[in-house]
Image (cartoon, rainbow over the protein chains, first blue to last red):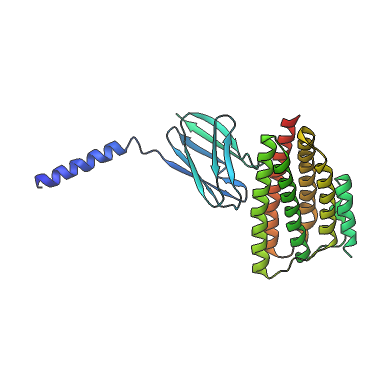
Length: 105
Length: 174
């Protein structure tokens, strides 16, 4: 193997290594007909939750006093989880919509 | 023929809990589309009055939510009736709803400040309860087109959310 190729390889290895700790997952939650699906998700600190709203009305994912994400109609919005713990969230516009996230440290 | 269920709706509007499901005559799809659309328009008008009159941040925000949601649902309803080539048909129930809403608007127009806010929100709770009851027990079971039925079912979930939201705002005003 030529030296140039080796250097390129080591570069790739370095890239893979630096990418590994940041390989936080993105968890998708669909909103369809006022239902968060899946209703409960397992995540860890650093993961991102993306809500995909298929409805014609806007929704929120709200944990009172902690965080709120506004998800416009036919759009997606996301949030990176910063704290561990189990949280119940709801839609502030339609409080009959409820979801749950378990965030592992 | 539909005086029967109109009477039932009028009773529901007055006492809030009439047995809608017992109405013998079912409204047709064009009538159902008209009733559902009208109910949305009336709540948008109520919202506009509240946005103009209220100085309460929570009440104005709620009214804007109502305006936005009902406009979105009604746009979907219009798109659907166009697609299905259904012509919404005016009927005694739509007229009874409109008349009751006009009376409520006139009543609210005489109020200001906290008295207006309280009356508007309380009426929003009652209005959504009535319309949701009608959707659940009469309009959805009577709808024959599957797409219309599905739209009404989603509408019901949205409006049940509004009812809870209105109850929450009413609780904050106390």
